[in-house]
Image 1 (cartoon, rainbow, N blue to C red):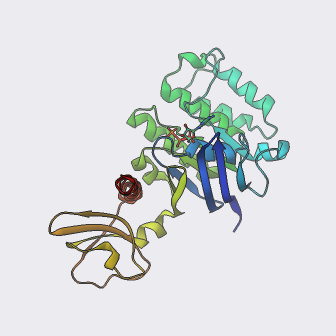
Image 2 (image 1 turned 45 degrees about the vertical axis):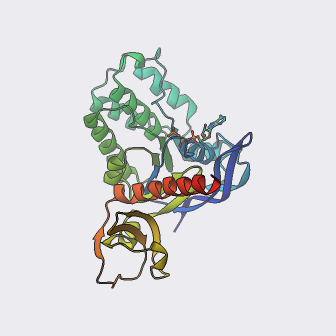
Image 3 (image 1 turned 120 degrees about the vertical axis):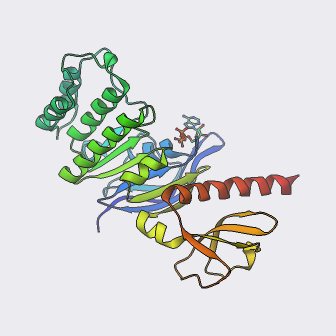
Length: 296
Ligand SMILES: Nc1ncnc2c1ncn2[C@@H]1O[C@H](COP(=O)(O)OP(=O)(O)OP(=O)(O)O)[C@@H](O)[C@H]1O
């Protein structure tokens, strides 16, 4: 299957600080990819590397068969990017935005843009600065879609929207994906939203990829085990412990394994996507705490 984004040992450093390091991922085409992680994890950095706005410090990245930075107009035309905070020009009207889009993008689909604006009920003469947050987000999405990219990258597109506007935004994104068959990578802190639309996940914590893969496979291979207190180091070798919590008598672990769990002492339950993401974030916090204690 065609690969939409492939990174090998990808890293980006600002001065002495790594914003992203050792990032190795392989995303097949045709997915809606959720990129999730805490503030400062490196999400925007990865998205900017993928859209060619940043050059890697180490490693390599390939998007739709080309090098994003310096890939030229053909590469630029294949990838749409909607930056954080729904960037539109406050002083320009909705119609001005569409005209600008047509001028800047060789593959511009004017009919698609006009039809979306009509369906959204936006007045073409309205200035973007006078639109609501949800309407601005929809305008930015329209500009991204009308470019007709093979890959659309959205950096926290719904962060500032209320729940209803978020749902409408994500619904129109999904309708467009079904109709025009392009790949999407979108970052968000709102895992419940990602759960509804994404079928591929990347969890980034503290500038490193913690886990990546198809959501269905990840959910099938991660389990919550609860039972009498147990040392996680004594689990079978094929059970990789992602996170562990203990009381005096009880242990609750999240483990990753492809093998069935036979131990009758455990109560085994499935995880939601949110549980899975939180387990990886929690693991990091626990690791950091342990390192801090060891250093002390
Ligand atoms: N231009 C820059 N110069 C210096 N450091 C930067 C620059 N851009 C990002 N960083 C740093 O790189 C790290 C990763 O930032 P990035 O914006 O990629 O994180 P993020 O996961 O998108 O965060 P958020 O969820 O808050 O948007 C942060 O520590 C940030 O301070």
